Length: 71
Image (cartoon, rainbow, N blue to C red; front, side, top):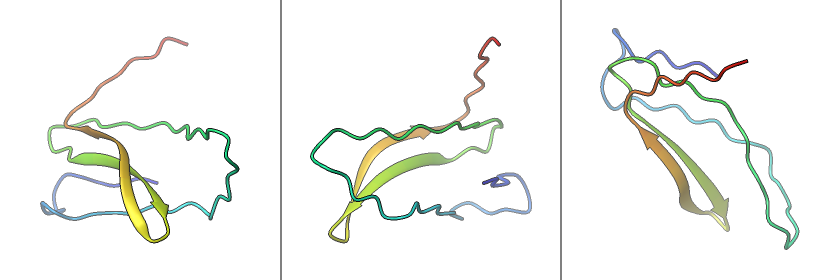
């Protein structure tokens, strides 16, 4: 998924990506993903779980991040 954060976008716009329903067991689960938050107009990236219709924020990152991962 790609979200453009510079003009003509306006502050407060949001995007949402939902995964299929995951019927986990009582074992711990892990979500892995890559993200890039390059640019001065970055907002916040939030990760939520949804259980029984209740959203619970489990992780977030805000602002400008430029990360180099050597290959």
